[in-house]
Length: 247
Ligand SMILES: [Zn+2]
Figure 1 (cartoon, rainbow, N blue to C red):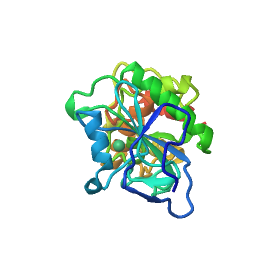
Figure 2 (figure 1 turned 180 degrees about the vertical axis):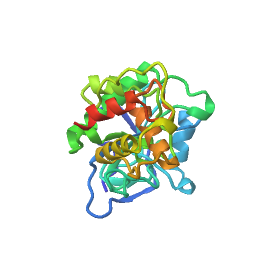
Figure 3 (figure 1 turned 45 degrees about the vertical axis):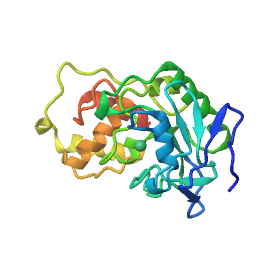
């Protein structure tokens, strides 16, 4: 694997030992967005490069927009964990990961600064020139691991990325005045929603009932595509948004 940064952008290079060859002949077809969930970006880089952590990521973008690369794009970094998208479970072999520094939901979840988002957009554009990553596969960690992860969360500017030509996104359907209770949903409506989520790529059961797993998948969907309310409830706005995305 070739050490050193992959791009023409102004990028710091700090090698992480936590990587290996991609498995199964997989090449990057997913761009996966994270937040660090740590208090300081420099400590997050230290952690992602520490042999004992057993985690890593290709890139980290700090709050000022500085980019650090830790793993070459041709290598398998360890950022996704137990994950699934479109039936693929080795997301680390199938993706390039960007850690966007933010302390996360457990520490106040501040807004992502503009300079940081500008850098995420520039870096993403650059990565997309080198790899065959379709717009529908620019994803959140929470999309591929809805049971375990909430990052980068409902404040991440997916709309801004889409305006910059990155990812797949449609304006969300407006919220109704009051979301219906799940108890009032017809099983066919639940099944239809689950089918659409599974069709789009989520690892969602299709059983006609709003089980705990379905709620977590719906919440992940909302954090990405209907960010004004990520409550895990199947409502009209969620279904409408999903139907337009799945077209
Ligand atoms: Zn993550």
